[in-house]
Length: 457
Image (cartoon, rainbow, N blue to C red; front, side, top):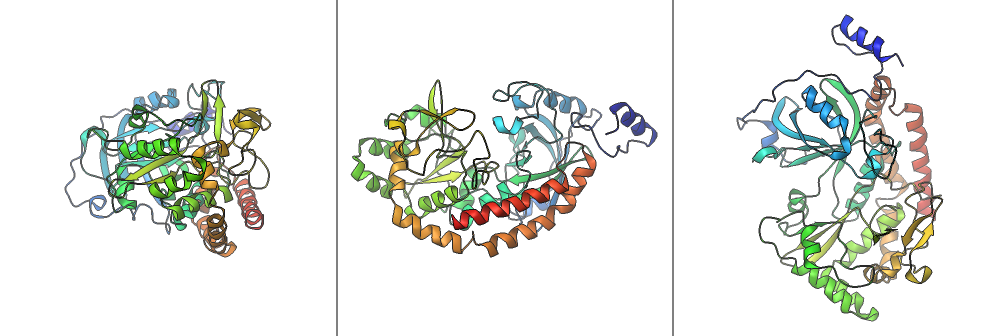
């Protein structure tokens, strides 16, 4: 890589054209400017079309962000703070301004990408070219939507060199009838510079629930399990704190609270009756089939244990108000598929089989890092789901012969690979920390081997 000094000289000499490769810890330089307030005329394409246009699986779209230099420096100095700055979004001739822009992600999104030394508590300045980003369209009270969306999420895929985990994982859930986010690839430009290839993944919010459910105005909760690990239900306040929709409408949490209460009170033999009262059995068993076949081990069936107790993450609940039915929604697919053949991720492996009870339901160390976990079968709800063995086998066969079949998945991977090949090569040629094409191709081959192993296991 050419030094930053030489690159700076070249920038001056050739009137702001870039060096061949940009250093991984330097954001595109940008002047300060006042972010304009642009009032929509009503003729903009983003006001006329719906979200299917954004999540079209058959094309690779390009989005551009313009961020004042000082604002970009601000978020680059501490990405893990996840603070919004103001900028502009440009897409296919339309400019939406102002919008809110920030970096996003849990611990994994910042691994090796910020200067702080403790990976478990990310801090410090940005050191990677790409970090996941969230764009808030409904910034400062804007009423207009962007293709009927309030937010856009660009996920960096830094932990997934196949660049396929999110898109394929969510597609498999959706093909099995499980409500799940839509995801496609997208090119992202920042201040005129190509940042790289991202996964554009749908925000799980009120727009998502209205798109996926006929009765879509109910409560959406993030990462709140009905029961504590001791089998008692969560408090009303806990459910309210996890609420992601209807927050300002004096919401009732009686549906999910009643579900939790009945689970708490049920004898083991009666848990299925509670589940069937509140859930669509085919949908929840299909969720489990997909989740376990692709080893989504960083999801709702992995209980991590720390000093404060044990808990799971990376899921949402949605409750249909009229039918009083609850639906589990998957989230965060970047670590899926990794542990299909071997436990390749040292953090995420789950001990035992789905529904097993281990160590008398006390936390235990597992994996090379000795991270404590709690067995999924010790949770009364998960144990109840695990008892649907006949339904599981039937839906597993449907999955393997349908969306998970070699013919269907390979056809998708071939199409998506060709769709993103030039963008992957472009990133490799532009940034010294970008994924190389040769490694990407090796990882795609490895993913195909993992999928074949899963089908025959």
